Image: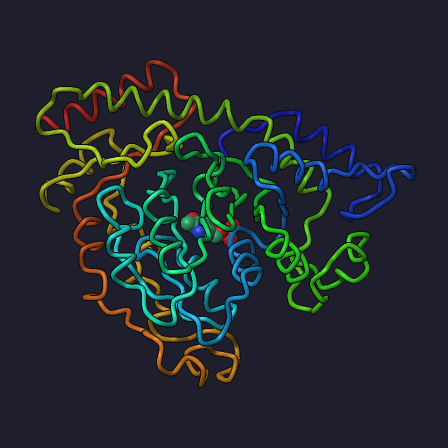
Length: 395
Ligand SMILES: Cc1ncc(COP(=O)(O)O)c(C=O)c1O
């Protein structure tokens, strides 16, 4: 979260004093409807018909999207090899198996490799708008349609981003966002949002996210039979924070993009400065500027130069698939018979997570440096970041 002010405190105070902290309540009895209002406002922002804020984070939102689509044992879901591990472990959470695919130089899912990895049991793909950089959604959706696959956008690192004028999360069948403390906006440290324009996905996701959905006012409108799954309901307190944060989102994105553009533009015509290609530079969130080099040594030399403060992609910990130990060691769930890697239905599915599986991704990550951007840099701070990058490149 980049910005916070008195407004968050004031809105939370109103909810606390109302004594109505649960998402459902009677407005006539002082219920402020913060959660319903946030969901309406998020749908207005994204253009998706249905939005659902939840307490289990982006991880819960991806899991609910998978459940909404009906993914389960016997199914494979394609996930990029460069993403936070939750994109893959959410697939396991519904009993299915994640199949990895390479990224390309844009740092997002390589559409060609995605198509190559499709097998007879593949049911869905999770393109991840990684580090605020939007995926090639035209190509991904075209391939998915050709093979009858569903598309779940993981927009956890791209709250409010867009691709060719459409907000991320609203382009595929469903989208997931994170509102944890480290994302563009937050709902108080943790939180997530699912959005979709499909009534069927929404209903199943809603039921999955609320163990008490049979008691909600919406229950009589549901056409999907009610089942019991998880408990990820949002509270009014988190929604009150999220609504204020939402009012800040376009200002934050505009300032992030302005500062990121200033860095990129400062290198126009500089032959040895190369940036990662973008699938839609206007829609990228501008949270990082991404430099690419011929080899790892050059990337490391740049990254460790004074004032850069970035990181080499391969050092991005649990965002790189070879670091996903619980998954690599097949330690999923608390009981072996609940571990999808042991399911009879999954025994013929692909479970290959070796270093060779996505070696292209590892090669790109070794040659790539991410430099984080602040929307609140003063012009001096921006100039000194540009100077640091210039000095490092010229070395
Ligand atoms: C790409 C990506 N997907 C999913 C998640 C999961 O979000 P959360 O931590 O809110 O569960 C994150 C969070 O870091 C993420 O970066």
